Length: 312
Image (tube, rainbow, N blue to C red; front, side, top):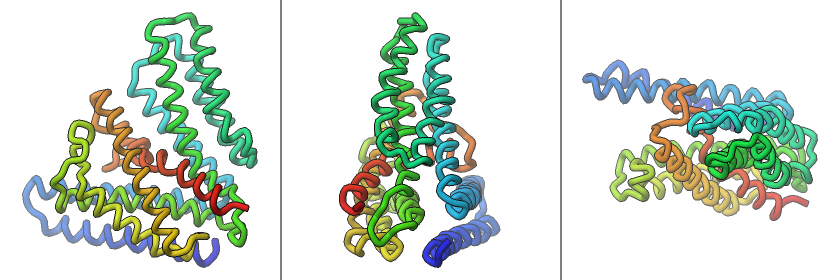
């Protein structure tokens, strides 16, 4: 933990402390059932943020292996939520066993051992080939394509896409060796700031719906206000990255855009299944997938831009 990492974690702790104090003040002053409900939701969200940030920060402090293990568990839980939403048949059970207990751990093992060549093709090539073969051997052809594609899609988003966040730890950027955790912090920080401020700006001045049938809460004003806020926040911590001030703002803009579409796409899946959240494991936030949907789309794009442009 160098001084930059400690400073960044201190900044986050300061924001959370401000949120806790604000929630306590509002709780003592707000009257009416509707107002109390909003405040209680705010307090539960902030409390959940304390726990999530403590887990994330603790993993970063312990080291790369702990961070990879944390993301592996996160992917496991997210995949479980995704599969639970969509109906499965007995013929899928063995393929699902492989997805959860063989492919997911093996994929993160390639990351922990820095086997980049296998990391990038294990799921999009070999798992994509294996899952339909395993399902075909089960002999159940009813809705075969739909059932197989569901497992493949879950692996891609919950495991493969999400794993590109901790994959930032294996990049070898000249003059930035041993500081991959700061790059991971930058990605997660910008994604979460964007999500929070899109919600805030949408509530304050959101008028123009972007995709009302998919996610009624997403507005043009929320996206613009939240995106600009996240770009400013990302640019403000450029000193902890290998980017210049302008590059940090540009990278933040890419993260914001991909994160927005990640949330929108995964909202479309929820609407298709007729549910509001992927789960209820995180008070005030829903499920694990509800919390990482934006990260899943932003992480692979951010990882490859950094790798192409900055790695030796």
